[in-house]
Image 1 (cartoon, rainbow, N blue to C red):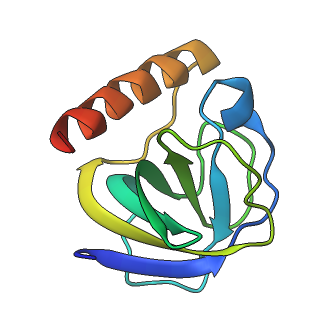
Image 2 (image 1 turned 90 degrees about the vertical axis):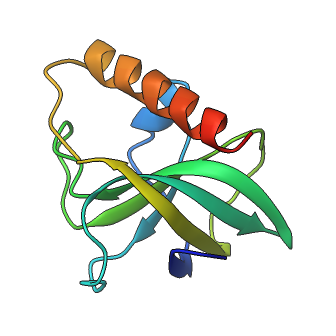
Length: 122
């Protein structure tokens, strides 16, 4: 794995990603000061298998939130990750974290981010 690596337990979030069609594995990374906030093309290892993904690192400015989180949307994976300790590799920062004026605007940006990440992984 090349990039910044995070290993942490998946915890329950506010489930907004699931409502938007982008369920995420949420990890509290408040103690990590070596990672800059933003959206990343990433990979994640689940049960020994590596999946492509996209991740957000930060404070989630578009929703009311506390703490600093790593949220990873895993491509082509369906399953329960709560309580698992997973390894995420942040491969490439693709943009800064920012506040969106609406959920629709956030969803449109996530679609664009996912398209970019999938294209880079081909």
